[in-house]
Image (cartoon, rainbow, N blue to C red; front, side, top):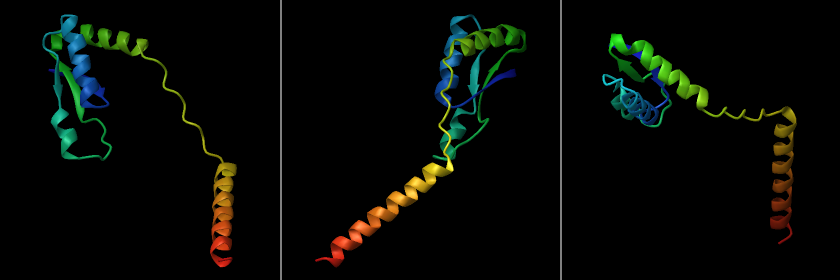
Length: 106
């Protein structure tokens, strides 16, 4: 058996194994999906893998490559700038002043 794909999680791995089975890769299987539960909510890497028999490696990789090309691009996360940080600090300061004035005036 050869590892052909490192899945992000068990759901992705099982979905891809189902796709491989539909395309004739009958030996495809998920390895390591039980390990994710052992670490709880901590992020993990490279625990869940997809394996196939050596004689199906090329066919399985072609199927997964075609699937990857059909996936939408991941949106970029906005970068936080120093002005965002300063705006947050200023807002916190203003809220603190207003709350303080409300309690002092009573």
